[in-house]
Length: 216
Image (cartoon, rainbow, N blue to C red; front, side, top):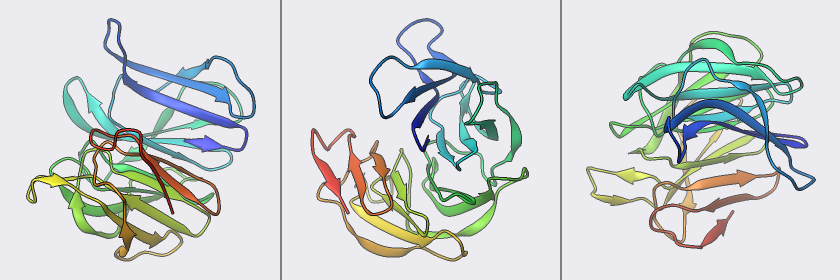
């Protein structure tokens, strides 16, 4: 997740033993230099997804000890320290995507090819609630980007269709309800990364995309 001036990396797979980590790293976006240690997640895990407000970072789900997990962690983005337990996701999955505004965090899709969208109120703690459904079930790290009003989910993989998806969906973050079709990516892909400011969203990376960067 990113907040003004800072970006955070949460857990993941690393190239040395042990091959997974609970580390939270941070770097300053406006300068160059190496990341610094910020703290630790509540468990070693990978394949999760994150979002943030101006004061709090959120880490959703992932795999822990080889199994899918449903835990949600939170940590302060203004002072270093370890994450604490926030609550539980409504489903136990990995490979979801997330978006947020300064109030609410949404997490969508995931392993098992599900279409549901869940949400939390970032400033409080508690379990995720049902938000609505994506237009298509998807998994494998579809990308999510957002501004203060709208969340957008793009790409992913459909095992029932047998191919990567180019579908882009959008929701209004402050309400609840099903997603609506936004348009299509130029390349269908899973493992897509994304970022955004208040005007433009970017989609890049993935197993099929090569070096192509899309924007909306």
